[in-house]
Length: 178
Image 1: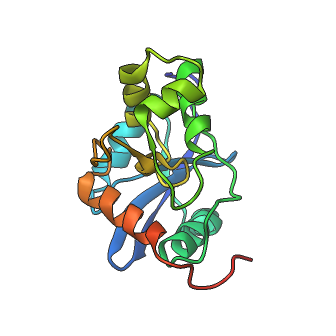
Image 2: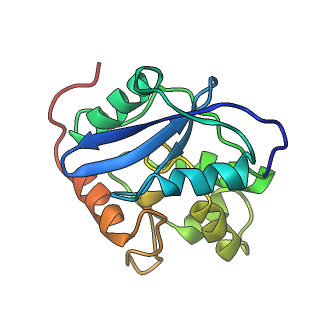
Image 3: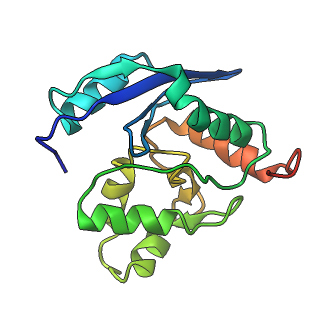
C-alpha cells in the first residue's frame, strides 16, 4: 500500500560473510530487508514505490540494533526477533505476513497451509503474491514457505538465499539467545 506521507527512511549495509544486504528502518522500526548481494538500487526502487519522495539517509548507528539481531540470526544464535517493524501492506498481505511469523524456526509450511491458516482456502496464489511483497524477509520468515510437494519455490531474495536460510535453520543453535 502506497503512502503519500513522506517519512525518512534510514538504511545501512549489513555485511556478515557471506551475507551482504541492505536494511532500512523508519523511526518506528525495520521496514525493509534487502536481497543477498543486491546493490543499493534495490532499496531505492523499493522506497520510491512505497514511499515516493521520502529521503533515504545512511545511518549505521540507528540501524545497529536491527543489524545486531539479524547478525545473531545469521550466526545461528537467534531464532526470533524482538526488534520493532514498520511495514505497510493491504489487510490481506498483513494477515499473510502475520501467519508467516507463526511458523516456528526450523519448520516450513506450504502456501496452502498459509491460505488455510488465514481462512482463505482458495487464495493460494494470492498468498504467494503477498509473500512475494514481504518487505522484511528473514524478520517475517517467508523463506519458510515451500511448495506443497516440498520443493523450493519463489523468493524475493532468490532461491539460493532461501536455501541458505533453510539450511541455517536446520543446524543446531550456536549459543543461547539473550
